[in-house]
Length: 249
Length: 249
Image (tube, rainbow over all chains, first blue to last red; front, side):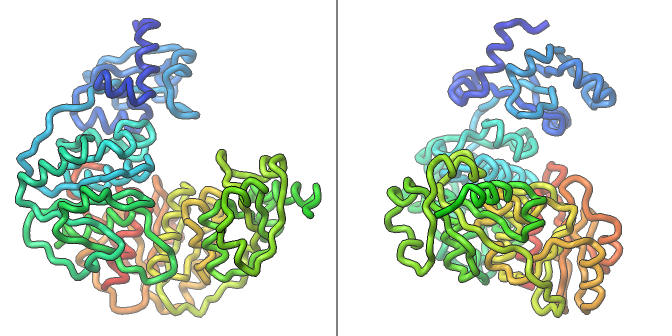
């Protein structure tokens, strides 16, 4: 049985400050909760409505070992973050400790402002098994519901995903012997770059590019040459094209 | 001077049926109208508010040969499609005739449902100078305001962009001697495929893939191998990665 106070708490997690204060976030939606269950990540609470159970009698949840709480339609309205809620939620802990002994490749997301772009980049990173992802704290909150939706639950597979200050990211990179490559508008054409050691790729803001302090620690730069007329590529698209090239090289 | 009836007409263009009936669409936003002016494409009417003029005295429009009409804030509210409108609009003709004598590469967008994905794919295509784009009529309308926003105005550079029926697309491809390649989950890994002739790439629906009739005309298939845990890549991301590979090959 969920109390009024618990509903109030779940509702509060739609705000960034409460997510950070409590190191928790509320995940919403069938496909994402499904990914969460399958990822094996620890789930503090799963919450569904009666309507959800009626509509989805075969949902994976009901054959799993997970307990779930049932709430009323009124309570769904209080805690939902989407217009047409699928009426299934999961409460998970965020945070965790940073692994600065980097093994695989690293993705630095610097000052990314659009939730859809940030989410898509996390989804691509997880597809390519890039687990070290450091998002600058001037980017949109990684647990923003729109980010989580567009990541399709990638968050829960990424073992070393953290949103931290630029200087913390710089200090981690300085301790590594990775080559740090900045994606810029005038870098080396991506087909000409050859990478012979472990790499960290920095992607910057949609309009303003990479923060100066982050740009300073890059020893190389890369760009995707323009063949047509557009002024720019979308950052999630450009970043994914670069990841695909770097992983394959 | 814009009449009440003209405002009513502009307002009606927020609906697909009126856009199709009139072969016109209303573009909204500073950056996109800017792209439109720079593209040299014929513009039927540019509409701004007083507020826009005060806020943007240096906007390219005011030094161009284009005439513009000024409307009231109340009329802006009637015709705008975004919550925080930038209060600048352009009326353009859509449609035009299909060039079926294909020269460069072809992109087939089949049953794409998300406006952001469709817009991003048009933006990427234009970046790579792919001008032949056939969007199936079961995809979201290419002149949907959200598609236009996320394309950043790519529409106006694409010389052979059309939304038509699957059988019309198939007949165009059948007349060409292009190799038709379908992006699927189990195709040839994208790094192993070699393309020695002109190509057409088909991308399909976010959840259901490519329509069967379209799939039938493909002689090859391609996929992006998964290295991590996610179930799928976003279609705009996957399509862009494939375009980047194909253009470079």
